[in-house]
Length: 288
Image 1 (tube, rainbow, N blue to C red):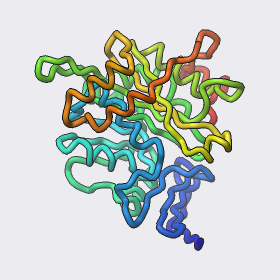
Image 2 (cartoon, rainbow, N blue to C red; image 1 turned 30 degrees about the vertical axis):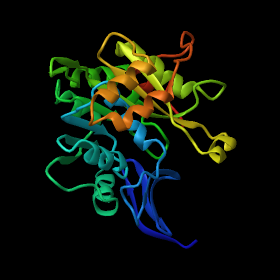
Image 3 (tube, rainbow, N blue to C red; image 1 turned 90 degrees about the horizontal axis):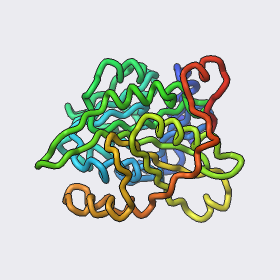
């Protein structure tokens, strides 16, 4: 299959390339693929994890305002734009080249419901307390995770940026959805477990969803995608109750299947907590 590089530059996040292979276009940061789209059908989910980003709707089914921390090629933004027609979406990325490429090469909607912002994610959070119903943390660079976006202090900023709303006499909690790549058990599970441990320090309830992968991906043993949801509500919901919540709302019943992918959190008693000082000292860094 022929390959064509249609964009190549160096940015804040590392070397950024856009590569076309047949009908597929992929954004790379360094050697790590970030987003792939089908040029013949851009709305089709090529990334297995993208539909799971809607796991937050099991807890808060009608987000009026969503913040994406980390844009990549904007597949998540496009999915939310289509799924929630009344929602406003802010997408923040520190790298202006990423924002340019998402807009010019990856079909990110250009209407007034979507705002693409070049800014440090933590600074943006600090400037918008109590502003968002959902925050989606999907930030990566050419080395994998930008660790400072996954510390206790960053999750505290995220929690302060969330709001609780009452809709039809029902309380809607603020929700953060995190895309985490790796394992939850075994000798390579440190990164995902640290994210779970750190989120559990900040959010009253944390839920883990495992992304279903094709058999060939599982056999390769190269890790999985997990979507972690933290909420401001105090009780932990069961998969059955999550499915029931989704089915009550016509806008989110199509996401009820995600509840079946809920997994029990592993024992985190021996897992490190990620903090700003550990990252600054190089004592603890997240790796893919």
